[in-house]
Length: 320
Image 1 (spheres, rainbow, N blue to C red):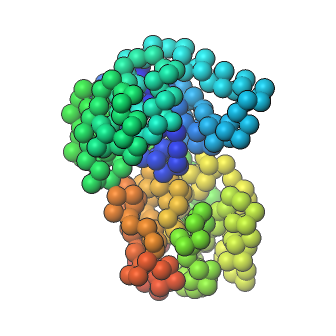
Image 2 (tube, rainbow, N blue to C red):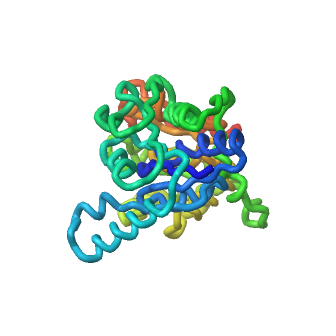
């Protein structure tokens, strides 16, 4: 059985689709998925054994110069890839007009998606051959699991979803035996940042634990923040620039993680790693970490500055 999955972005949304793949693989042992995903997240689907082919799309980048010769060539390559197979089912788990447009105009096979009451952009539901009512009042992982089960004709498991990727990132090398924690300090929204002085207070509390602190980063300003956080602490390492797979390896082998609300916090959940995620203006209820040992720490008044470093350390030290 060959299925096309359309789930293009963001990092958290892409990761949230993995447990549904695991469910489908257990229910239909010969199933294989092709996955349409934004080019920046194309590594993620390759980590799951049910994925046969990743079909990158670059709508965000293409929009900037839609009719240029290089972009036209890329769009033609994408069109050829998506039209190369007749699919037994096409599942649009993104639920947007752009994703529905992709699957209805280009892909061959019956189209499945949320009904108009269950979808982010209701008009998108009219592009599907089969539509399903799936409650919005549950975690995104569970919504996607139920969409897959309805689309492919099996009963959705009631057990917690399994991302099924953590094993490939675990190490047994001597380096992996040196204990460390990861602090994910960067996010895209300013109001979701925990102040640097709070991070440094937490780092100070780690001084006598014998556990190293590692700080990843992705952009220049994130690197500068990491360097400021590490200044004066010989047990804090600012990591070099890493690929997403290398970040996953760092997270998978850590003792625990402390993170702000960011895509990498969802990666931590997908790797079954203990994580304390700090939430200010966002509600962790339906979009927080889904997985084993995921702890949400919510500011009482939605302002990150009031999350106390000592409170986090008291919880974190039990995992060191």
